[in-house]
Structures are given as C-alpha cells and as structure tokens.
Image 1 (cartoon, rainbow, N blue to C red):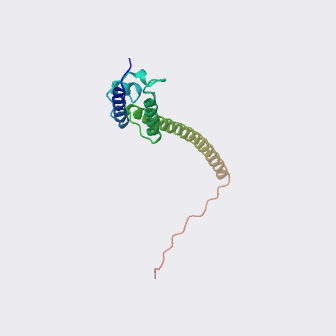
Image 2 (image 1 turned 60 degrees about the vertical axis):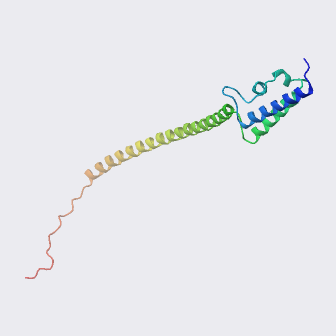
Length: 155
C-alpha cells in the first residue's frame, strides 16, 4: 500500500520525535534503545527501516547518533549503561582478585622463609648453648667474692 507524501512526512516527524526521546533516555519500561522500540514508539512497521524501504535513512541516522553517544560516553539505555558499568566493575574486581592472589602467594612464601630462618636460628642457639655449657663445665674459674668496704668512715 502506497502512502502519500503528507503521510510519509508525518511518519518521519513521528520517527524523529521518537528517536529524540529514545536518545534522551526516555525508554519505555522493558524496552531497549533500538530500532524495534523506535518503530513501536513511532507507530511504524519495523521492516520499513531496512533495505531500500522508505525509512532506511532514518535507521542509519538513529544508529549513527546512538554510536556518537556511545563514543561520547553517554548511554541512553539504562540497561546498557548498567551492563557497561557491571562489566567495568567485574573487570576491576577480577584485577583485584588477581592482585590479592599474587599477594597471598608472596606472603605465604615469605612466611615459609621466615619460619625456616627461625627454625635454623633456634637450632643454632640450642647448639651454641650446648657448646657453652660443655665448655663452661670444663673451664670454670671461680672469681673471688667481692670484699665489703666502707667508704668515708673515720675512726
């Protein structure tokens, strides 16, 4: 069925208005910022946006504007924004987890080395004490007892 030039202009105006609303983030609940929602909001058949159909140029314009917003860091679709945010958060958490696992490995190695050093030092102390006790038993010299002196007494 052919439409008149006035109807086509009216449809294009509705499509552009719906396009502006969607790109501002005014997305109906449960919908996305996509051609399907654009067609539904404008009251136009979705197939009219593809191939050589009458509104294919508007689909290209919509996709270009949407891509421009994405490059600028603005995401009109709250679900897409949430997905992007969650993916970034997931990446950060994975990095933190990898850093934590690396730190745990390093600290475990340090603990193992510290315990080994402490055990070696303990063994050395026990050995030196034993050697000192043996040497002391063989070479003990008793010093004379200290004399008591009185200082500053006059008789």
